[in-house]
Image 1 (tube, helix red, strand yellow):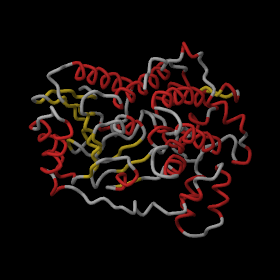
Image 2 (cartoon, rainbow, N blue to C red; image 1 turned 180 degrees about the horizontal axis):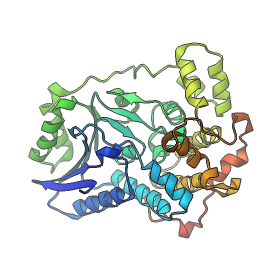
Image 3 (spheres, helix red, strand yellow; image 1 turned 90 degrees about the vertical axis):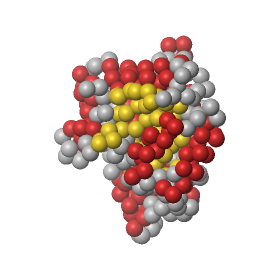
Image 4 (cartoon, rainbow, N blue to C red; image 1 turned 30 degrees about the vertical axis):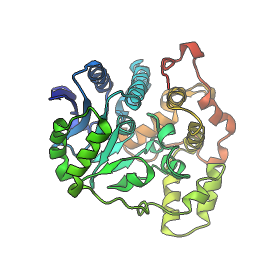
Length: 370
């Protein structure tokens, strides 16, 4: 059976991710199927809006997507499979399409929404979460960086929250993403089947009016948003994660002995020192770039993650392949990061990730426009 189910109900295009045994992790074929469906819906004047959800082992909804297929990344990098390059080029092009989609695109972000799952939802017209939502960009744990436009949407979170989420991979649950601008509306998960059907009964000629009607219809099922963010938040984010480098952040956290500071320290200590420094640079550069520029930058970065030519490292010697090995392949949870200490990371190591390996007119994402 297809891993992406596509159907039309009245004037609504419907997409269901259907790879529950892999937590709806995105494969290259899924990215291609999503792209084809969205382009067809966009070009079909009879389609007025598009909704996307997932299928879990228990039925519809439950787990939107745990991210990209990192086991494929590992295998492809070790074997030299050129499909690895296609994966990121086509995934980032899909992310761009969603952000610039010409029709209302409504994402039902139930359960896990991580990595690649964020890439296919953050550009949505309406991003809907539930009490079961578990959202994060945890890529630093595998020696990667928050890609799929993470440098764009995380850097636009309030204050230094983008740096904090990108570096620590902190999980946001329930309605918490509302307070940082990563979701638009939180409803009870039990109302999702009715919501899915109700979208087809609304007139989407005026999208703002249609969304207002839905919010009125499901007002009794709306979850309260927490203005104080959640238990993960601490005001010190705004004084620590604005510091100039990751080493200074760690030193600042070490001066505190409370639970929040110690949790942050543990999160950072589990991650690649090199990629922490790269990610901090990514978020701060991303804040000044439009979406197309950001995705082009991330395409450069991800090439260097698997083929770090400026470091003389590629394949199994790269931070990303080693991180995936430790977390998802051999599962020993003891990645051998190189360098092992933040103090050993140099600006030359970091800067190389932002040098494009392609001339401008040959860049795989040169076609993207803001």
